[in-house]
Image (cartoon, rainbow, N blue to C red; front, side):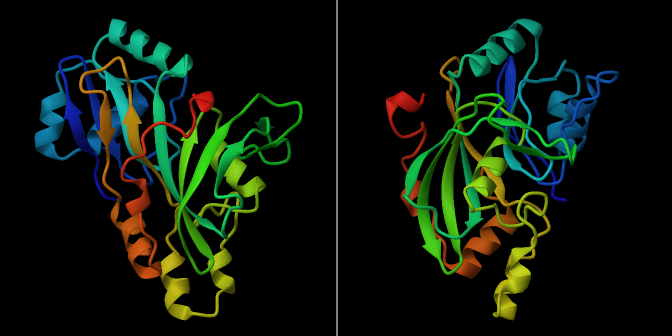
Length: 250
């Protein structure tokens, strides 16, 4: 697993780039454990920049997911930022490589989600579950695959992964929701390229109006960029994307 890095260091907050594979699960008896793991994944010089601060996570990413994580250095800033997330004033833009070509090329998944009672690791579409909304836009396609921009309009567990799988387009490498579909490909080179060992989901851009600066971006990790290069997918169409398409989606 590659290390974490600091994207922006402010007086009262920081934005970090979480590597894939790092869990931010937070047990009740040790609420500081996830932040400690994130700081431990930094290089020595960056770790020293934060070691004397009281670091609290503002939000979390699934263990397989790479990308932007926001932390606060004091309780008042933490309350302010968690409120911004809960009131949906924060725009979170993800990139994912998915199986198949979603149709239409943009829209909103709005199925409610709830726990999978047969597998406690999973969530599932559930008519009696909590309201959940995910906007998507197809950016690029290749044989068998698409690069998709995603906006989590609500904050349910595994939301993007479940919505995509339910639509028939699970994220490449997401064995929990999609299975190792690359094994069915005829091209051995492509099979090897897509055997990445984690869901190719990246928290790419974050916009927080309460902060200055307000926009942050994390470069694609090596495994994600390698798959794009091997398959010919391009993120060029995402250059100007920040908030979800259409004000009604905010």
